[in-house]
Each structure stands twice: as C-alpha cells, then as structure tokens.
Image 1 (spheres, one colour):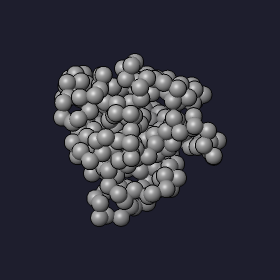
Image 2 (cartoon, rainbow, N blue to C red):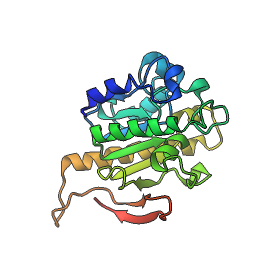
Image 3 (tube, helix red, strand yellow):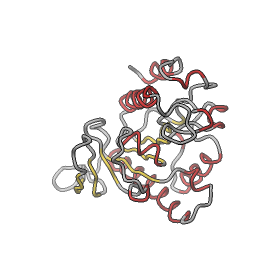
Image 4 (tube, helix red, strand yellow):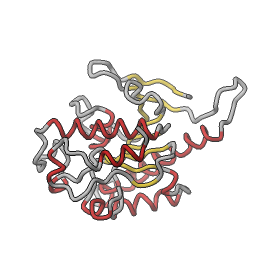
Length: 240
C-alpha cells in the first residue's frame, strides 16, 4: 500500500474505541519521503485541532532543537503510536485511561505504525517518551526497564519487525521537558543527542561514503537488539 492510500485508509479506521471520541485522525507531520522518523505516544489536543503531530508547545520545543542542528520539518516524518487522541489525553496503561483494558487500541496502533514504517522505509528512528518506547520497541510487554532513564540515550534495533531500520534512538518526550522536572538540562541533551545521531546516520548513508573495504562509513555505536519476549537483549557494535 502506498503512503497516501495508507493515510486515507487510516482516517476511516473504526477498529478500536478511539474512533468514537476522536475529532480527527492525526496521521503525521513532515515528509514521508525521508530516512528519519520521529515517533511520540499520542496526539495532543493541539495536534487534534491542527491535524498535525507535534504542533503544540512540545512541537515548538522540538522544532527549536531541530533548528539548532539544521534539521527542517521536511527532513523527517513525525508521527505517534496512536493516531487518535485518547480520552483525557491518557495513553493505554495510564491510570486515567478509559480504554487500557481494550486490546484493540494497542493492536490497532501497532498495526498502523508497522504499515507506516513499511511505507516510509526509514533508516533511523527517534522514539520520544516511555509510551513510544513501550509500544514501538517492546510491543506493550512488561519487560521494558521500569526506570525510563535506563532506556534513554541508547540505540536499538528490532530486526524482526523493521529490518531496514538500523538505528532506533530513545529519548525524553519534549512535553516532559516543558514540565521543568529535575534534570531537565540532561534530558534536553538527550533529545539533542538522539535527533543529532539520527541525522548523522541518515546523512552518512545518503552521502554513500566508502571506506577502504568498500563499506559505507557510518558512526559506530553499541546497538541493543530486541527480539522475542523470551530472548535476551544483545549489545553489539554495529557499523552498518
């Protein structure tokens, strides 16, 4: 399915309870012809009003970080795990959520995300916040580290889901920074580092720089490979 058809199909989705309360589907913001995807948890009230992801104060903060690194909106595709704003803004699993026990919400969101990733074929991703990490990397399983600080600023792969995505970076959601929580400067550094590394990796691939062995030269990093629930996470140096 091409990207435009996918977007139009998603806008008609009625597979989970969210279609009963949404004002509109918020599918993306940015450019679908890109090597980098930014993924958050769920649309905000501003996103739902504007029809674009990261369109509120959180998006403004993210845009300032992008501007400082020379990243334009057209250089990336922004989206969320959920395409519809949940009641009260609560994500599945949150205590305020009215649909956390309904398995169709998680299933539907993962289905649309996987279809979106397949259509875009990015090489790098940035996941913003615990909800994005929980549902994109761990598929809602309970084996994600309980302390989100143990998850951020690391590089991951999900070869079983997205073999073409070689770098998945996890960082704080911009909305968390806006709350002024302790350690906000370190968290901002994490956000800047994640989007910078994703940009550098994509730029290196586009430049197609070759080393003495003929392999494309990209920044080396330790990559944590997450596979099946029973399989351990594997840390290895990855340069491709």
